[in-house]
Image (cartoon, rainbow, N blue to C red):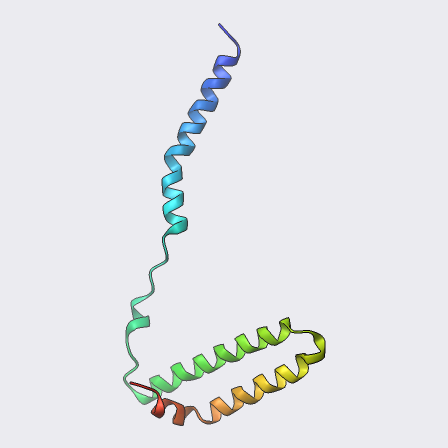
Length: 103
């Protein structure tokens, strides 16, 4: 018997195992994660709306800071200063922003 046949048989079995697993891997990688149901429930009370708005203002500030950090050093300080000013202004006017938001 040829000595290479067991090696070929092992390689064929390993390939077959990988091929049977591949569709599951592809499905897991390509399938988008489902959003939690709470993301689609509206905040009905004013305090809940303000909490959400403050979280969104904070997230926007973090994104602005990250964008400022990507800029060259020469303009970074001015960018951060502007980001902080917008953040403070938004927080100071959160109630007005909440009431003027489309329902």
